[in-house]
Length: 161
Image 1 (cartoon, rainbow, N blue to C red):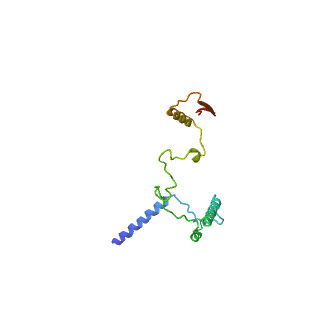
Image 2 (image 1 turned 45 degrees about the vertical axis):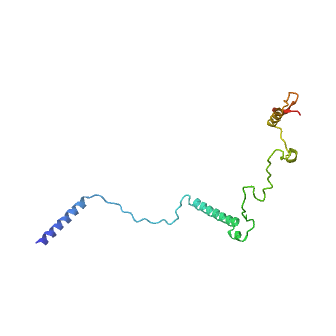
Image 3 (image 1 turned 60 degrees about the vertical axis):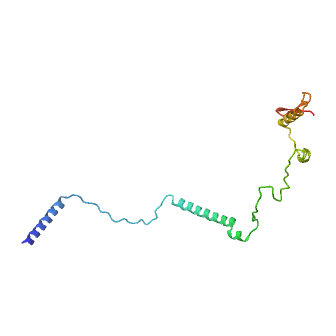
């Protein structure tokens, strides 16, 4: 009894589904699967990309060759010429070279200018210093003792001794 009811129910459902399908007007267009084209596909810029990649690779190889030629790590091991040997240095004058730099305690020990110096510049300050020395010695310089020298754009006054 129960089985008959289930069969009748299933039959009615099928009939109802068939009626609904008959009322439906939608009919999709189904296409075939995608087929690969026989000819090669053209991609713009691909040739330039491979060209630049080849140039970069060649440039890198040339750089490595230059580095191997210039730096040559295997050649540096066998050659030891030109190696600097560090030696201690002295900052004080108590070492063996202390006699080279003489310290003068008084002005009488100083060498004269003609012995030590080869160039004496004529500057305004040296003229002023000479005048001040003459005044300090007690003999004031008069205008007759001074003469003027043209030094380009400026004039320098010098004492005539």
